Amino acid sequence: MTKEEILEKSRNDNGGKDIEDLEVQKSSARIAYFSSFAFCILISLLNWIFSKKISVQCWLVFFGMLSVAFFVKFIELKKKHELFVALSYLVIFVLLLIFFLLQITGKLNGSSGESL
Image (cartoon, rainbow, N blue to C red):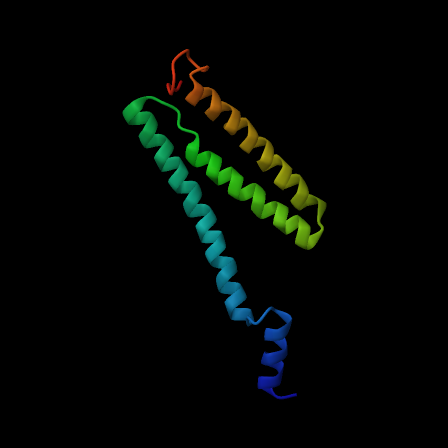
């Protein structure tokens, strides 16, 4: 087999992408995960400093994204660990969603839209 035949077989096995593409996607996903976590922390801190309120919106998006990502990993890999992590993130997402809904309906701290 020539080098080109091996590369072509690898691309076919990996959905048209070579190993370098897959590694770049993997590292960029890792960087995106950590940077979005840092952005959520920054937004939460700024919101607390300037308004003395707790904001859960960015955390809702963050944990929703993580739960979907780990459910997809579980479906693809069939590993129980991925399911456990996905369910854990889903529980956090649901708790934050309840907190958010209580905030915007005014049932938390007695007035509409007010936070802790």
